[in-house]
Image (tube, rainbow, N blue to C red):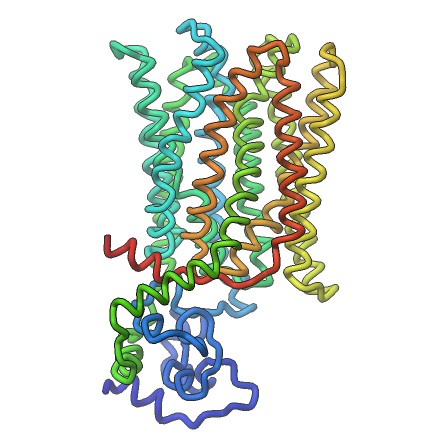
Length: 520
């Protein structure tokens, strides 16, 4: 038995008010741990004795196989204290995550503005553009599960910084497309690589929020990070036409890539201290627990894991379906708003960029306000977090559907300003998803937020790929974009019903799945 474990076992249990954590005097004896972690270590020994529920490692009723699972940084049971939320370390993590979110939006959205000159330069059809728009999502979906595992085990913020450097490099390589023998094929491959690098974005943000922010702050912080994505979208839509006039179409992609590389280097310097630490001595603490727990036979472990997965299957299906609908609307609107406005007679590239930026500017404002509002309802009004998550997500779906239906029933001669206003309000309702759906995932599965969001985001991306291809064909048909808006509105309405029925707040734990993926 290690000296550290003996010190932990020597303390008398104090069941009154006990929450599964070591007493305050433990921190006084190990001040460096407290200063380094800004959290509370689990008393594993005591949890095994009294069966107290602890977040993520040892819980009453766990099978023997679950007790023997190897912990990961995302499941070490750290609970950030409220006073640590405003600390310098948390602020730095938040700023780096915001910068990654901004640069991801800039790298992704710039193509939407320049899609029209690229289409004219290479004489591409609407169906061809739909395929190229989806090429980013092909790489994006392939990298989701590895990105989720990486974010949960490496640390969400570290994964975001590495991803930002990678997708910025693909942006730099775009400069060589005009010199390629088959520029369309090279463009397709580079867009796939860009998507694969950006696959870490949503799992990384989810893991960062679960690992670094307190439960009361998650809605606010998560909304702030995603609001920065909308800000990056606005900046890209406005700046891209100006950059294209100065350095050319493909030089614009390269310039944004250089900025992203600089931001990633700055993020590494800002997080010179490793942003997520493993608990010092955690292996020593767990070794004593493992010595007293007989390992279950592999057959028993498989049965336990299968039963647990079946128990969570309904909840996972709801999360995947809800995120798929969110992704369908998001990717379709992000990719095709400039083309839709161009079909209404907006031909000036700068005007097209400004009008296309309006929905995302409003989304950023709604996301920021909704995050603050969710925190106010939870802290000041004492609302249950489940009630807040359910309400925000339902409003998001119903509001977006109503605005898109207005576009469906209006005439084809609609003014570009009215069309922009309707789309802006519809997209802005997606800002409520961050304190709604995304914070809900972090609440019910804080230890596995990266992996679960990777699973759901894979469905979201698949829906986005399908949506871009379908939109390309529908836009070229006699129904035009009105059919696209009708389809999206119908999905929103159906999603609001399923969310109202199925979002019960039941916890999900898939640590065994993440550990198996790591062994693979």
